[in-house]
Image (cartoon, rainbow, N blue to C red):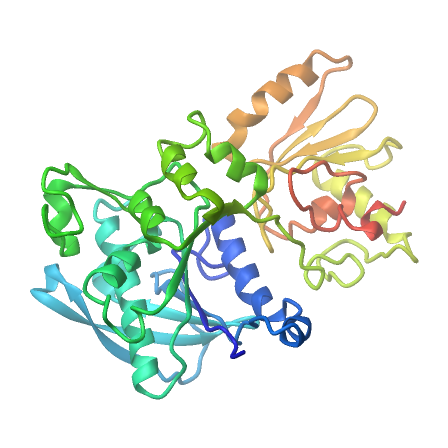
Length: 401
């Protein structure tokens, strides 16, 4: 069986553009997919994933390309703002085992920040359409047609509007299957009726109902995708409930077995204290002495007593960066405890914090803004409770003391 060609469309990809876990998942999946037991799958007659996986990403203002010539292509994309269509450059960039294809369209992406613009729906529709046109251009030049469109969150969902409408009979896009991964159900990509024209849509056009007040791009993508998943089985179960489904629970329930959660994994090529050059000292299960050095380094950085003999606890909410994040830290009586969470997440820590503050002596809390190696905190901790996978601290080497 021929290898499956996968193309991802996403608003973020670590390390080029990141605000949270979406970027980490896109990067990790693009690297990992071609390495998922291909010899075993081939022997069993199952599909393998063709390398490299393509990741289509906006060419944001903050992305700095390394020097060198690149064979960019130019595609024409429907754009109501440009009077019908616009020329968009697609710039290739080799990544860590996959290929990033930057969508270079300054009117949409040469701006400060990734999100928060009033025309975000138009911007990310340009991303999706340029990705589809680039895939069509690849096939016209003799390349393999795409088999699977892997779409991340609402930003990529407009690709399914085009696939199911104007490109339904297209021999490249029309034949592709779509997987939509919902990383954050709270953001739907709502487009009010007055703004539908920016996306080339109109009430009663066959895509938007005549009496619709607008379109919910995430909901529409879930409806159209062949498969929908999310980043953990627990999150998938929660998403089916009214309290945590953010208005999408019934739509997800209707997908039946075509909606599921995948268990987070751990790339030990990156998260390995035996090879990590950014921790205070390397160590392994066979040679664990460096673990204590990492522990003292962590406590010193947090302004705590590096000679404290108690264990150092780290708590992860799952938002672990491949190479950087922001954490809040807590100090338990008789031990040193770290609890990560960016400023936007500290509300979730408050109940935990309140419970600890009833202990004697009082809990010491540290909230430094770290953006260096996140390997330092799991390397310096003893156990690290986490709802999914935890680098360094969850490995046998990390537990060696």
